Image 1: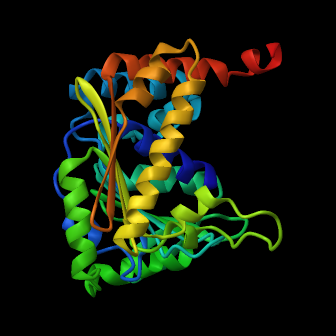
Image 2 (image 1 turned 180 degrees about the vertical axis):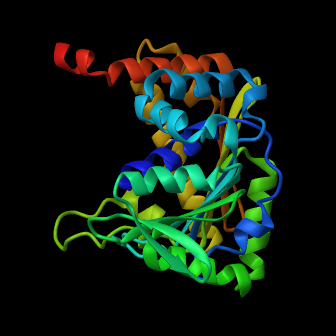
Length: 315
């Protein structure tokens, strides 16, 4: 069960690294828990139309034997069948809860039959069948219809099923922020709470890091990536005061200068670092960076090679 869920979600995420996004699907947003603090979305619909999208799709086909097996057994292929993905969490540090919902084309009967064949537990909840992990029954996947999939911890999945009939919309300000980023980016993420609150509190003791302190003042953050002839990365951090935003901007610029000195003879890394621009306006800090699409693809290829078992063993 965990393997099936992981294959669906991982492939969807990888496939989505390209294409033109429209605003986040309202029907998917309606499935998200109303207290979600961290959300991310990707749209796969246009991935096949770009060089980089084709590259990612080919990587899935070439390297993911489990995904090929899933496609053969069920006819489900996220490279073809998934159109949009939205993930959400309440942002509790260390929490194992969360929700992923996707829009696409799913042969529910085949997928359910495959799960049953491999010992998956099924539960009928409010008219929707949930496929559950037979070992712990803590996580599940549900297909309310042939175009929607819901996955996550069992409580979150059941909550989303409840919202099919009784929507509990996100706050209006959050929806505005989501639409802002989903309209302009191919893949995006938003946190409506301080990023520092999303990680466990560090242990007491030790010398405080003044640079880290600048990031503690961030109250909200968002980021995204847009693919095309140029791969453009964008980020936004909202601080508690304009002064702290100015300080954060200065710290980021300092880190960029340090990075420039450490790029050495790597022209790609140097080009990426050199492209970064940082500005502060009021209490908001904006940053962008970009690389040509083919150069970014080469970067990923080099990274994949450096992480291969053979390369690691050689080192």
